[in-house]
Amino acid sequence: MKTIHRKNKFHSKFGFGLLILIGLLASCSNDFLDTKYPTDYVAGDSIFVMSDVQSFEQEINMRNTEAASWKLFQFPRWLEVSPKEGTVNPGSGVNFQFSVNKNEMYFDLGIFALPLVFEVEDVGLVQHTIVVWNVGEPDISNTPPVIEVDYTFQGMYQINNSGYGILLWEVVNKPDWLTLETTEGMLNAHEYGIWQYTIDSEDLEPGEYSGKVEIRHNAASSSYFIEFKFTIEESAYYGNYLSGEFIDARYIKNMNQVVVLTKNPNNLLFFSADSQDADTLNLDRIPQCFDISEDESTFAVGFSNAEISTYSANSGALLQTYPAGNIPANIAFASENRLFFLENSEFGYYLTGLDLESGNRNKAKNYTGGISILKKVPGKNLLLASRPGWSPDGLFVFDISHELVPDSLNEYWMSLNGFWLAEDGERIFAGTRRIYQIPEYVPGQLWSMETPPVLGEFDFSSDLTIYSMAHQNSPGKIFIACDVPWNRSTSYIKIIDHNTLVEQKTLELSPNPPFGYPPGNTWWSETVKIFPSVSGSEIWVIQEQPPADHNDPNMWSIQRLPL
Image (cartoon, rainbow, N blue to C red; front, side, top):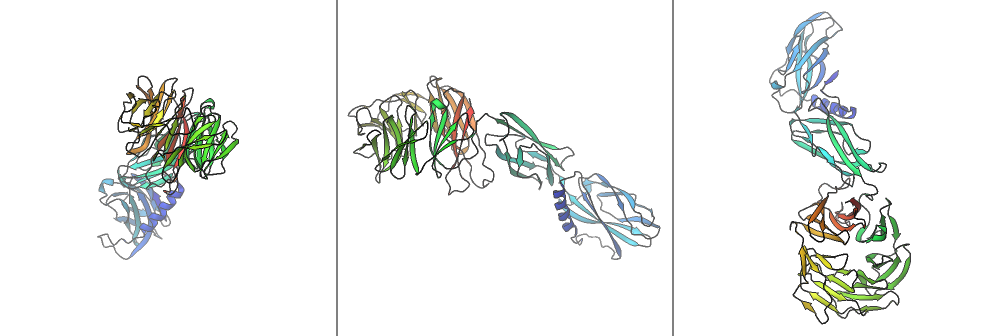
């Protein structure tokens, strides 16, 4: 017969596994004991006990067939046995009270088999086996004690054993909306475990939620609790990590809608504030770039087969397809009927104009090596460009006021590290933190060592790298997405007054890896696009994250955050 004594009861599946493990170890030889035992003994029962059990009762059979006297012959020094002698009738056992003195356990953590021997009249030595699992003094905690769940509704939970002992734990209660990767386990001394959790938010109404996970364990008699807290924003998040390689995105102000261009699959995805699901416009070719006209009526998409197609922004209907003469690398609308694109030739990029009414193309005579950023200045007949990766990356100003041929340009020999334009077309916000006045085109000026007039500079840590900006002329705010290059798991969005340049608020975003993400992979998150809503009450945020397989394109996500 086998009897197990432990302080807390654990799940039957875990207990069964524990019983098998103990049974195997208990069958080990007792040769390590110094004492020489007589060979003429009768085998008795096996009694299993956890070292954290202070006392227990057990009835023991003395294997006698007649009334007999007995006395305790041998026992472990850490086990107090009472009574130590007496008489017993045949067919009945003796009830014993056992007390465990942990201070007398001079062996290490683990499972040990020790003899408990009685001398019984007319029977001889009856040896029972005490199998003890010395679990020491475990201690349970988790990091952090309260888990603030982010918008991905998934993350990691950690259980620590900071004591010198073996921690056995099991989840006995949790909220229905919470799924835990592991609900029971064992941790050795000074060991911790990290597992994945996910929250099913599909059927939850908008609001604040919290729930506790109850864990039964052997470190104390009371349960341990981990609290989870999260918020469901109304239509604020659009799935977890979305499919397709992110190319670019635009914001339609009059509809509070974000349009995302992806390839593999080749789609235009329309995300609206009043719907949890994106509307999809399937594209029949591989897209490279796109833009939306200033009046928000038309999309233009450049494809890898050297074509440009226009679409209605309202219906998604294909309007017309134009031969581009080469693969377009970037597109910028000049007006509703005219656009410019960077033609990706073998030797560099050529700025090319396309008349959407006649289909005529006009290509610049000179190539502009390295240019890959092209932006139309709001309300002005100017295109601005730069060449990332060059030193300096420079500012190129193209005059598009008179003719389609885009050969009238000024070049400013300056460093920008990326640039974004003010909504009113008056200022350039540079990745170097400098703010410049947008220059007018100067006829006859080829290039200049002088920068445009400096209007200010953002005052925040130089450790932060800027990835995206947006400006709202009303209510007068600048939004800056940035992070620390050596700790890219957290992104920041700074909200700054556009007149005083005083920082008003900072949002933090720290999305967790998706379930099953390889633990050895480096995790980061980069904010690639931000679009504040016209009302100023929220901001759309698009982020890219590394894929589980390095051969795949980056993952991406989109959400709306309240301001």
